[in-house]
Picture 1 (cartoon, one colour):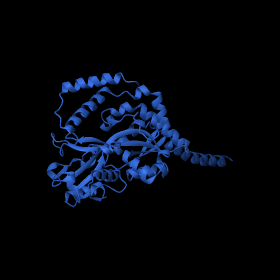
Picture 2: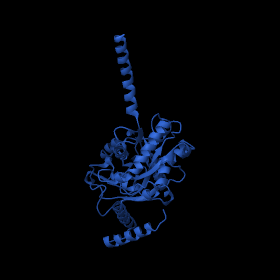
Picture 3: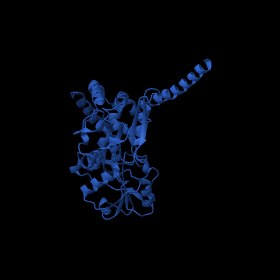
Picture 4: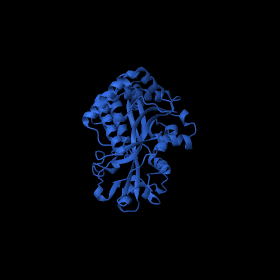
Length: 362
C-alpha cells in the first residue's frame, strides 16, 4: 500500500506540475503583431512590453507579421493575435477592398505615431517626376509601403514600374543602379537607412502633398536631424506622413483573452507618460491617447479608461509639448518658404497657445 501511495503521489505531482506551468506561462499574455524590423513598430512593441510586463500576471509577446495588410487579416482570423499595429491608409484600403464591414469586426485602442513616406533615389533622379517609366521598389505586396506608394503615385499621376522586393534586397539593387528609387514607409529615422551617405550616390527626393488626400496623409519634412548623412541642414525634404493605429481583435467570444487585453490597456494608458522618457522611442511624443478615428469605434475598455481619466488623458509633459510645438513651427515655416522665427517669438507664441489651451473645455 505504501508503494502504491508513493507511486500515485509521484504520478499526481508529475501531472499537475506541467498544468501549473502552462497556466503560469499564459497568464495575462497579450500577443501584439507588428511589421518587420526595417521599420519602428518592433521598437514600439518592445517599449510596450517593458511597460506592461510584470513577470507574473502580465506579459506582451510581440509577433513580427508579414505585412501591414496581413496584420489586419491575422487580427481577424489568426489564432492568438489580440492586437496589431496597422497604418491608417492600409486599414482604409482593407475596409474598401478586402473586408467590407471591417469597422464592425475590429476596434481601435489608440491612434499612435505618424510614419513618413521616404523616397530614396539615385543621384541622377532629381525630382519625383523623373520617376515616370522608371523602376521603383515598394516593399513586398500587401505591405504598408506598397499600398501607400500606389495611392501617392496615383494621386500625383506618376506612372512608374513598381517592383516588390524586400527593402534590403531593393537597397542592394539601388546600389548597383538596377532600380531608380526605393519607396519606404516608416517612422523617422528608419533603421533601413542607417549608415547611408549622400556621397554614396543616394538622396531623398521631395514628395509633394496633395490636399485631396488630407484625410489620410499629412505634410511633413525629413530633416538633417533625422538623417545627418543624407539631408543637408538648409534643405529639408518635403514628404507626407500616415498615421498608425493600435487595433484590437474582436474578443467577445474569448473572455480570458479579452480580460488580458483590457488589463494591457489599463497599464498602457495609465503608464503612458513613462513612455515619453529618454530610452523609449521618440515617436511616443506624437501620441495622443484621446485622439478619435472617424468611422471606427474604440475598444470598450479603452473608451472607459478615457471617460474615467478625461483630465489625465489631456495632460502632456509640458517640455514634450513645447518641443513638439517648436518643431511644428520650424517645419511649417520651412515648408512655406518663410523666414525662421526667432526663439523669443516662438516662446511668446507657445505661451499664447498654452493660455488658449488652459481655457478650453475638457
